View 1: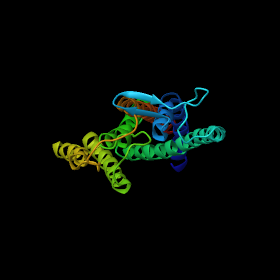
View 2 (view 1 turned 120 degrees about the vertical axis):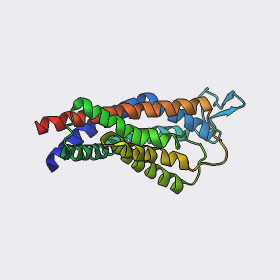
View 3 (view 1 turned 180 degrees about the horizontal axis):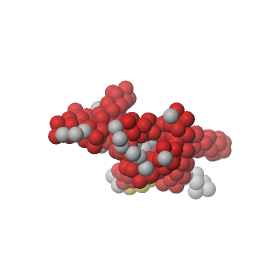
View 4 (view 1 turned 30 degrees about the vertical axis):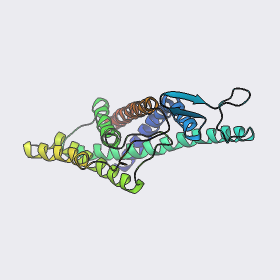
Length: 240
């Protein structure tokens, strides 16, 4: 059983992590880099007008940036890409292990997991870990002010746990009482509300921030569905 858990999680985590990395490089990373240009002052957004700071050759630079720093920034960018790749592999392998542990628990109650039902499990994981917390704490571009990070972490973890438990009660519970309890757990963190500053502020245009949020959630949804489908496929093969 342990070998089954590990192998399914590793295969699924690698596949989902690879998909997530490729989609992030294509859709999300360019927005992050543009957000950093606003954070450093290379671009400014004021009253709907874009102001770009350029050097004598027409290259976009921050006011304090020197030519000698450009090569170093390119090296840092490659290091960031490598870190993104390995972190996605590790994180999605961990998510895969948790997901497959859920398969094992469901199997004890007579629920069989296949490729297609695994995709549904992956979608539920996306809702619990990404979508539900994003309803209160959405993905933010660099330079966006935020409330106390510890309070935000507590709210995020509480939301993930209550959402997972609530989904389990609604889907696997038998009887109206379980459905009501599950719905209450799903709603509780959002009724309490996420910690936020009493104002909205940020150096990037709101259109860029909105695009960043939507693309981030889209990439995570695809990765989670792949994670669940691949994990379900290998789990089903090993239990046949």
